[in-house]
Amino acid sequence: MSFVDWSQAYTVNNPSLDEQHQKLFAIINKLHEAMFAKRGRESVGETIRELVEYTQKHFSEEERQMELHGYAGLAAHKKVHEELLKKVKEIEKHYQQSSESVAGEMIGFLVSDWLVKHILGMDKQYAPYLKGNRHQ
Ligand SMILES: [Fe+2]
Ligand SMILES: [Fe+2]
Image 1 (spheres, rainbow, N blue to C red):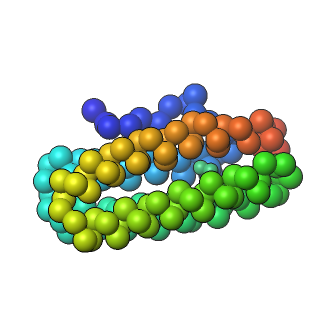
Image 2 (cartoon, rainbow, N blue to C red):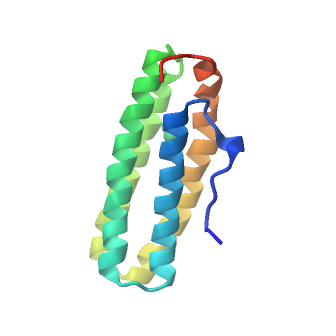
Image 3 (tube, rainbow, N blue to C red):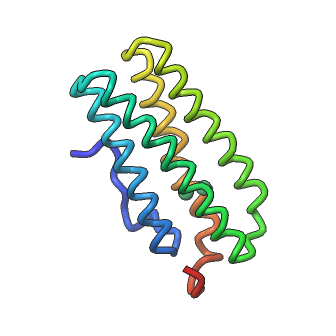
């Protein structure tokens, strides 16, 4: 069983963004598994790096789509992305400097709380704007 599961109910009406969200869920699951299976620092560290990189890629693609569809909430959404990215980078830094157990707790909380909540909350708000639009 996965730690977090993407569901069709989370769709943002854009196949490529949905795919990216699924990939983010998969990275979160991988991170969770790496920690609980005690795969070692290297594997956990690598997965955190993957999360940072993919989050960056996803946020810029999502912002491009919102802009393309003239979404009015773009500026506010961008600001939240900036904060989230800053936090992921802080997690990475903290992980490199502290013990695995402390980082594990922090990552579990931050990732499920903000990343999943962001997708299910704020990302869902732009979904109606993307509906039925051909720019995909
Ligand atoms: Fe998103
Ligand atoms: Fe977003």
